Image (cartoon, rainbow, N blue to C red; front, side):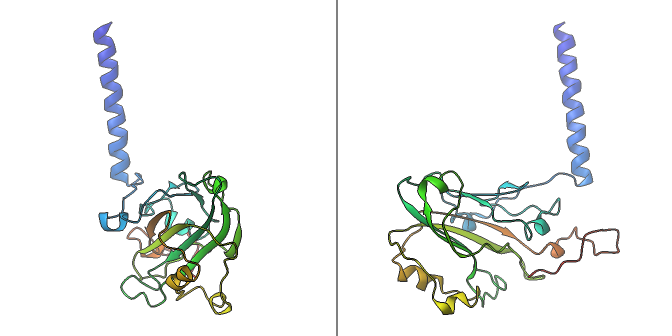
Length: 221
């Protein structure tokens, strides 16, 4: 009986190994790649969840399952700050410091999301409920602009009235984030993280429509 069980276990292990090997050979394995140590410095105590992807903090958006295209259409992610104080109030900022590209960030910072008056008890559970000064705008890196960092910061809100100037409201690009933070005496973030992605058409696996791929030909914003 003992040898029979060992043989059965060995057969099961071999079959699983063959399945994994076959999936890897066929390119079906979806790999989650971590950011470099330099970029991972920003990842401190904040979690960002997108549909299908899970917590993408401190990771590259995988180049599989059309994730790099899907993320340009998904609604706002679940942002969770487990270390939030339940009696405190917080500000959430999401920016792209690499607009239009990391090598030439002339439109730094691109403001993707800005929410104030978030209760600590809410963001601790992943609920971003507050005053939305800038509605969520999905990541849409331009084609041939390389990888972009999408950064999330949570600040402790000690003042009640946080607002954007009329000039800041005219455009999301070239936002002087440091001036905004200084204006409301916001120093170091309580938590932060980031992920990276690129335009889905820049993927080495991307096939243009008409070349055996039924993807719609969408242009990034």
